[in-house]
Amino acid sequence: MLLSDTDMATLKAMAMAKGTYYKGLPPWNGGVPPTNGLIFIDTPSGQPLTQALVTSDPTQAVTLDIHSNGTWSGWLVVAGSIDISGNVNMSGLIYAQNDVTLHGSGSGGFTGAVISTNRVDTSSTNVGDEGDVGNAPIAYDCPAVRNGGGTLSQNWFVMPGTYQETSGATLP
Image (cartoon, rainbow, N blue to C red; front, side):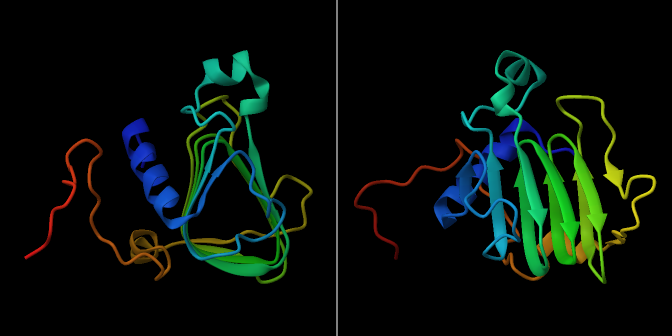
């Protein structure tokens, strides 16, 4: 499952409308996201993540760190990489346009899907490096992906450019 730049723009707009869009690393970097639902972490410039963008400006390569204990459900979409460790239980979708590194501990784990697209480099995603005593079990669950672990109720999306709201229009 790869999200196109158009898909990413749609999710970015949805997160902006909900107040869960972050340009660059969020203030809670290092902890579990503070709210369930859709969270979008963008490049610091807001431009689509590409190898050329990162080559010309290495500060555009963000890595969201989640190094704590907690529970979270939803869609976590990052235009960059994600590094997760600690006793974290997540349900829904974790989507990184570059790399994902998982070093779980305790009874933490992931229900849904974890997707890494390696858009900037060819590094592979790591689930517990060699010698790492942690664990990061991933249980694929299609309904959890679809509804963000029960936090996303909308089953449809408006494609950008296909809808226009008219000023002063009223609903019947």
